[in-house]
Amino acid sequence: MAANYNEKLLLNYVPVYVMLPLGVVNVENVFADPETVETQLKRLKEEAGIDGVMVDVWWGIIESKGPKQYDWTAYKTLFQLIARLGLKIQAIMSFHQCGGNVGDVVTIPIPKWVREVGESDPDIYYTNRRGTRDIEYLSLGVDNLPLFAGRTPVQMYSDYMSSFKEKMLELIEAGAIVDIEVGLGPAGELRYPAYPQSQGWVFPGIGEFQCYDKYLKSEFKEAAAKAGHPEWDLPDNAGEYNDKAEETGFFKTNGTYVSEEGKFFLTWYSNKLIFHGDQIIGEANKIFAGLKVNLAAKVLLLLL
Image (cartoon, rainbow, N blue to C red; front, side, top):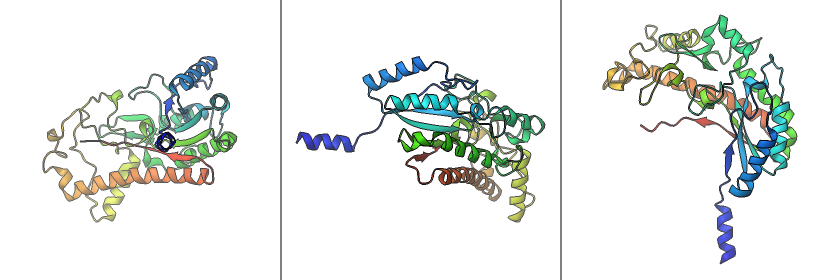
């Protein structure tokens, strides 16, 4: 009976992973305190029985020096330490800025050379109706535009993951890196930055649509024209970050959202996000095909 009970426990076992500090590799691309990290991980393994760790691998650190100038040295040292302790690794391909979200205690922007493009063309960022930019992640409106030293964002994300695979292949094949989570938006999540605390949003404000950069504006007008309604435009009555739904013309009972125009917009807005995620996950699937590693992504779930 005891043997059967133990077998059932093993079948139902849930691995336990802990999140490493966001800045375990700092913004200067230095693994600054390996001794402390090793001591803490040993204690977590021995006393808490953890199976592994999750760690953000920041685009803004690795490719900070220029296009395709990847430096994985610090992260490889970190990963080798973790593997030596017999722990597994869940690596997050973090293409967003660290800083400005709940729990962010350090600031790691996206690469400087990418931000420099935004200085002359701020429409590469998500934008609300008043023209306020959110610089933590590139707008999906530029996903397939070669604005960044001849590459598109999708190509940049793909090249980054390919370089990661090349430099970490030994650890992947050894079974040390078991999961790769692909960042798809702000805070790594497949979502729009609709409720940025950095712009004053507080719960339970409704947030704002983030599709008013010139690229998404153009795409919407093109889609509306193809649907036979060139007069349709992006919503101008959906309120501001801290409004309540009933205070807005768009979300109030029987508001714009139930009209043909409103439904068209919401479908377009949602499908743009789905296609964005599908493109990047598709690249990851091609890159890591044939390797014993799981791919994952974070999708925001709102319970209303």
